[in-house]
Length: 392
Image 1 (cartoon, rainbow, N blue to C red):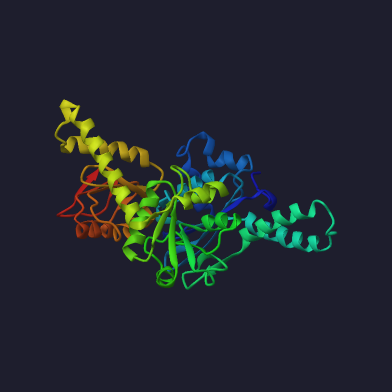
Image 2 (cartoon, rainbow, N blue to C red):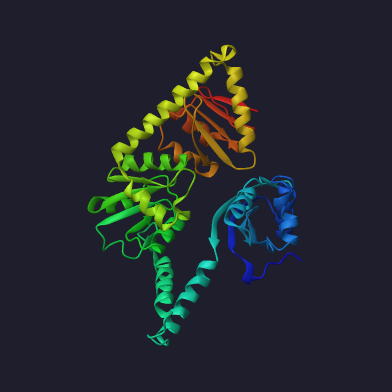
């Protein structure tokens, strides 16, 4: 029961697991079902998803050496990408298997339909060769296949194996995007010279080298995360223009018309940063205006901070994410806990961090180095003389 046959699988979640002590496959599978029960609501209950065939058989491959267990967890999914990503994130909340401390880190969520699509395209091209050129439908079919072929024209580029169009060396102008799915979508609509940061918080050396010889446009998602990427890329220099997807949309889901519109509206890096700073200033001003109309809360105090932290923790529960806040308690952005330290190395003016995870020595160390005032979580396993550790 619950097995998903390959024909219906859309995504494969692959995760690494480490545990102190000896645990077997049954222990790990039991922990996954047991510790995620009730976490995501009845509609995303793993047992029910498996019964209905939306989640397949969970495969676990581990080995124990020197009293430490390491291995891999594979979870097939026939759900959409958002639901699959939520299930993947839920795996990382498991921090204990039986008496053993454990850690699960998701390595990838792969779209298995990509391989099938490539097979279809190759077969379609072969079949087209045998079709009569006078067929009235041939041109239409050819156009569709060419468009799909463009979507498959992706390679791993440079030592970091960045997702890129296969013409990246030949073009004079390039588009820098956030991830592989963005590259696929842009190539699908006929755009050339596309390369992805692949989720890196630091600009990869390969892209820095391209910046020296090519005109570069950074194309970001229409959310706060996109603005954080602009800050990281701006620090590296070399990007001339910034294009932004419509508010709330990602580059990977844009239509051809939306892509053209966004690129036509691109700004210079300086202009974009100036506009962003003005918007942030206006948001802060509006926030101060709202506060001034509340006579009981004209002066922020530790009690009001704690209440705000508690609300943020409730929002983050189960997401394994972290909010970064400035001195005005304005949320600068949200990042995965696994990327928190790398992100802090790129940012300034962070005053507080609220996270759904563990506050450990490494996080405290960089917080002290960056002059961060608050670290807030439900699980604190370190001490600090300069950072206020708030456990709620």
